[in-house]
Length: 95
Image (cartoon, rainbow, N blue to C red; front, top):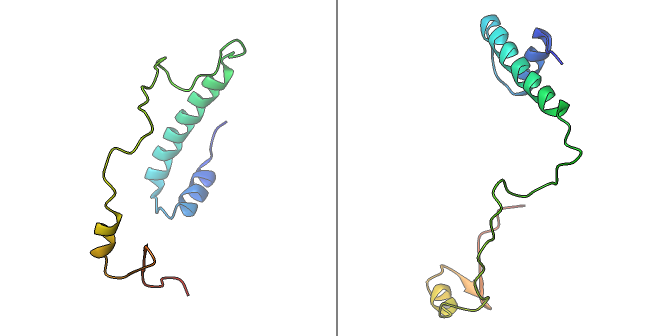
């Protein structure tokens, strides 16, 4: 797939970017290079490749799910500008 200068101009307008004709030509070449690379990647046969979540097969060490800090909720609510029924009160921002 190859982009034309008109398509690059349309993309630039959508992105709210002002391009000179010289910049548009340079961007067109760069975008076409990216699209050519994507086409090369799509041409690779990946039928026998197992999907993986990470490039390195690592196991994440998990810790026990338990409380490790003291409950300081009341301390934090005490220094809040406004609090009621255990909740922080904030100014209304949506009308």
